[in-house]
Length: 85
Length: 385
Image (tube, rainbow over all chains, first blue to last red; front, side, top):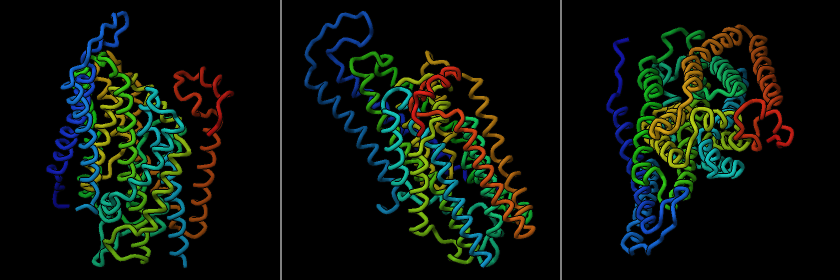
């Protein structure tokens, strides 16, 4: 055997692609939840439920974030299907 | 004629292996969702089964790695192995898989499969028949690194999710994460199809090539893809409650933001790897992600003694299955009688394990119970699946 060549590039690619995709999707979705919660009290026990109207910008931003997260998932699936390329 | 019979035997036992793989994998995909209450166990299992089948058709890169990346080939492109050896290797893998399933350990079906195959090839055709460079760079290293990749990513993702939502205390975050988790768990099932179902396809394709029924270096045929996809989906649907409990509850107590982060990380790791043809152990990736998610939220305590028990099973899997596969090869290549003995051993061993597991079943009703004493009480009320 003449030395074992390891394809480190591919392994590094798996790490970076996974890191970027997963953290981005989780972050954008969490941000969406945070924006949609503006104007509502936290769900913690013992906190008085004071409420105010959610600003339209927060509503739009929140749903946009969740939409972007969903689109990113669909794009990821698109990328792994060889028939599309 | 002899070759035809062993090819049929290999296809039969490969599909059984695929079925047991499905048994293991329900757990990986759906454990966290079921434990956090995001999905009812029965619905979770159905979604998982269907998406496993869909995933099997999406990408067949991993199948090609298995059929032409593990063994060295001769000048005609035919690997140095016989159909009898493949069969013996598979018997080793199936027995190991059923044994770890009975003990409730999320061992790796993948490593059992490769271990059995390598053991059979080494005993049957010598060390030169195995492409060790390919095994190290395409199987061993990705296998060792992938749980850490998934774990580190899940740790970061969990941290980010908790930071942004103020420890998941903002209004509606609990419900929001539970919905997200249903989607991420489904993605993991899809990812399984692109990786786990492929391994059996690769083995059957390898057998067809060696037996002369298919050209060298060709991909899996449609009927092979369909049969493997159906076998793993049926196995998944039949339920892997026993292992689901270990992964979901015993390693760490999981909340839905963690489940979402862990599953998204695991699905991304597997999908990217499938695309590059790395046959990962989906069990190890998911377990790594679950541990990462546990560390990401400091409040959750990881049960390290369970983690170490599982880790030992992982380290043992490949060599242990290789030994069983090698022994089976020694026996099966002696004579036709030897081959028949291996068939009987495989059937007998499998039947024994199933019988033993039946005595203390883990079913939909007691999936979230933690200790053994509670189990025996709930089993009476539980329906066997």
